[in-house]
Length: 441
Image (cartoon, rainbow, N blue to C red; front, side):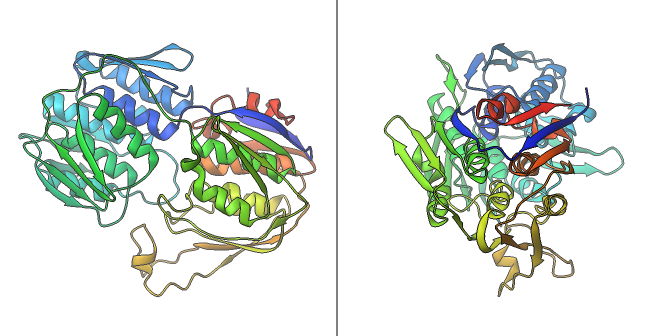
């Protein structure tokens, strides 16, 4: 089987979608479960490639981690017998870096490869390393082997302030701090709901973590313990993808079950674009196309801002909007890889300059004044897209290209389907249930 989708677009998509569990919670709670001295059951875990890769990595380390039902995973870290993460599999997913925490707690020393995942810009590993060192760990990187060597000879202690907000960094240091010497405080921490869901899981298991805005305090505990399974929250990125998929085809979709707080910023922008939104007490959203879509101006930012993961999807919707729309990417420096692909379908998109007064303050990545960046685009619409052959380069861009293929008239081939499937469960089945014509090549 080829690693591609064949899509016949131009149909109006309508229907109901039940969301899968959040990828960005699932990966973190699976790793956190390795810190327990018992078997831990996790529910609503999406059956996606990234989760499968992580479970395999954990098994290679000697621990138990497997699906026992469709969306239920059981983890038991007591049998961990290796402190070195497999290079080949570890380099496939970014979250492999977080395995450093349970390995340090178990062995006091570990070896973890430079993390993989989507190449959407340089990720802030340096912020995590700096935080680890501040709390008492020793970390070195061997460029010859591609491995980080970390050592933790004493219980972590101290206070750390993130120079820029990072949700992975926040979650990493929370886990590292659980069994600390005394209270550890993290400043300028991420406020993502996925981070709070991890905190909820840990606090229900005996952790002592408190949040006050961007300040998080972690008081030391001796162990984590659970008597019942933990069910993770639904995936807001999937919710946005399917909402835009239906709306860009001038259709209607009902999405369940998700808290309004998870989609507050997205819903605000959707309403500004002239799209209908209804919410029911059963935590169901209904998004529906009215008569036309208004142009918009988007700037990405960490929660509670407009998510960087949403902007590629939003770009396709804006190809159907009236007038000129702008998207400014502030979180990553290489998130517009999809632009050239959308142009193949007839999208009118051009790069524009963003003139912030203080780029180092405006952007959330490590801005280099000597480097050239393309951080803004202008989309002119409405446009009639046509079919084409496209190539997926990262997870969210993959969903974007699939949406574009479903909007476009004619047939499209989307290469790199497995990249999209790293983060979306049963994507073909869900699109087909809405009336979309999509199949694996």
